[in-house]
Image 1 (spheres, one colour):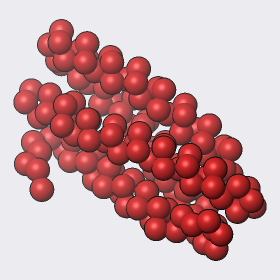
Image 2: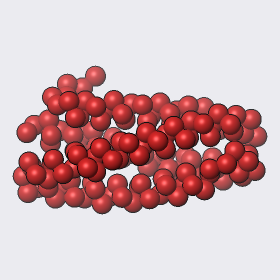
Image 3: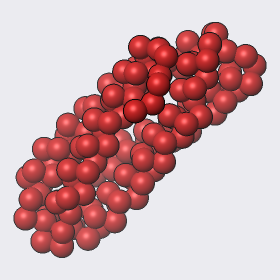
Image 4: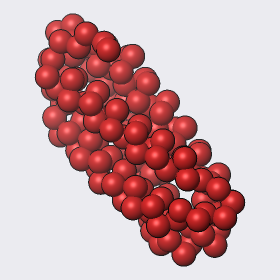
Length: 141
C-alpha cells in the first residue's frame, strides 16, 4: 500500500479500489451467451453510481484545490487532467446509456463485450495516471 499523506488522496485511492473491483466483477461475467446479464447490469449500475460520485469529488473538490494551491506547472497539469476526464466521462456516460437494458446486453453480447473492454481499459489507464502523476502533487504540498 502506498504511503499517502492526505485524507483526500486516501479517499480517492479507496474509491479507485472500489471502482476496479466492480470492473473486475463485470469482466468475470463477460461471455458470448451473457447468462449473467442481470448481474452485469446490476454491477454496471453500481459502477456508474460510484464513478459519478468519484468524478464529482474530483471536479468540485480535488481539482480546484490543486489549482488553488499548486505551482503553475501543477495548475497546467491539473487542467489537462480535467479536460481529459471530461472526455472519458462523456464516453462512459454514452456507454452506460447505450447498455441500460439487460435485453440489449444479451442481444448484442459481442458488441457489449468489446465496448466494455475498451471503456474499462480507458478507466484503468486513467486511474493509474491519477495515482502516479496527479495525487503526488497534493501529497507533496
